[in-house]
Length: 387
Image (cartoon, rainbow, N blue to C red; front, side, top):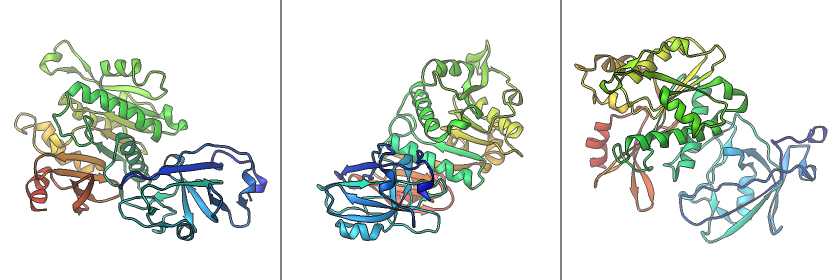
């Protein structure tokens, strides 16, 4: 079938290389898109592609799919290729295999740490319905974190989830609340939101995605810095008043802020002022509920509300959120660290389970996992000390 169509961006010729330097490091593919000589490598009868080592001593026909960020992944004949290339399965060194959803696939990598292997991938085809079949691990850096959060969001959207939460520290992957200064953490969240949107929001949905910052001044700052020249719609939740120092802000009616063509709302770090989350609930009720729209709350520090940080006697409306609004949320990506000799991390990447992790040496081990989100108190006082 390939002989009768012009190759597009889903089909390309590339060379892949990777030096395995340390356990736990994923195998990522550096791709150079070309269309020259593509048809020399494609078998039109069964859609297989010729894959070989760069030195030419091994040749195999494989099916290949487009994986994370357009990186190639072998999906058919990988066991045979692995055997002939002297590649073995090693639990700590992860090569993700993509599956079409039938649960197949494995995790493989190179058996010798100092071995430099070049794969010559002759073509790649992509299928947006594919999903990574292995459960995500604690990210090694913020780039990997954003990739994981993107994939978790895509999976949640496919499953019909409408109200999503993404929460992680911005002062360092293993930092805890209070390690960073508030303004710096917000700026860090803004930079990561831009990177997330660049990866997650397709070009045709950019003008249909609206980002709500806490207040109008933050929108101005975003337009002059991180989001300069960006086509994403930038908006705000509250507008400061003359009595801002006393916690008063001007009421903004959220139904007036949205447009009929809006499809995705991303709410950026709504935690500096206690009124911001109340406005988020209003936005959900007036513009998301009973529609096809989606809402993502990005680093909203909702654990403050869950844990009773705001006394219900003084903040009754916030107290109600924990009963009426928060239960509707699907926390699709989450990292919360615990310090101390019995420290660790609570981690989740949708659709995987909630995991309690502890760093041992240079990698994390899973101490406990469950389907429902445990309370931070339960993790700190029960799970981590008893592990």
